[in-house]
Image 1 (cartoon, rainbow, N blue to C red):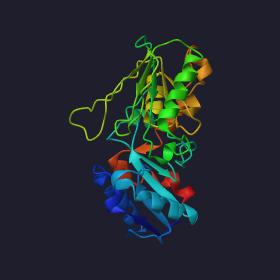
Image 2: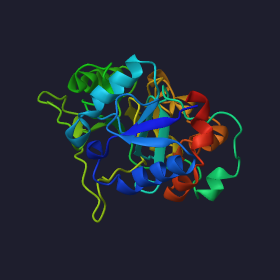
Image 3: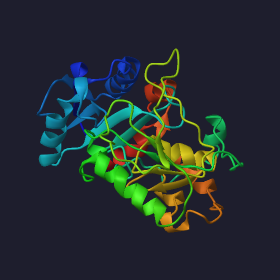
Image 4: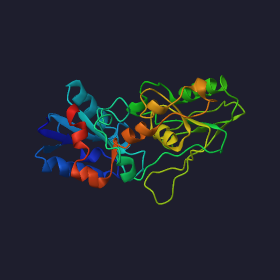
Length: 281
């Protein structure tokens, strides 16, 4: 078990203050020494794996700790209740990270978080391709994000003639200059009075997303998620070849598991998350 942990206060998003404070308060109460800007601690805690803006310097921290075989706790805004629940994982925030969310489950946790599964209703017939930030560790294996989007369009067209909408990441530009006539771009719009939330409906026929929030949110909404194996939505995702088949997978256990990947501020202060990830520390 770790005895000390490094944190990097100048390398966090502007909305992260209460989250970082809650995590550090718990660690200190548990007797774990917190060390500011250290590269020699037993472990590190960083905000996000987006190597951009204030978090760009986290890449060197992450790679240093991982190269020395030491764990990195990653904190990130959640997908269940954006801005109200927060991801906590070891070494990654995709399915490649460790959450401790597949055993010793609290089957009442979805009810406690007031999260339930929706069922698909007839809505927008389109297939949405939800792009991600090109400078994130989540997408480093994809290459150029514009190329990935164009590949998805080709794959969709091999299986359905439904209209296609592309949702760029709001802070990562796509160079889409030669789109087919039946493909449109749906620009995200900021939700008023939020830090960085953007509008997105989930009444589409399907959502294609590599491994970020839209895949999880689509699965919760009963909208077919077509995702990579590294996505937390992968256990309830479908292949693109099944895009016209009914979406009737049993999502009940997955709902309970996904509710063990994010925590409220109060739970962060209480350390509910720590016992889940302790095995990976």
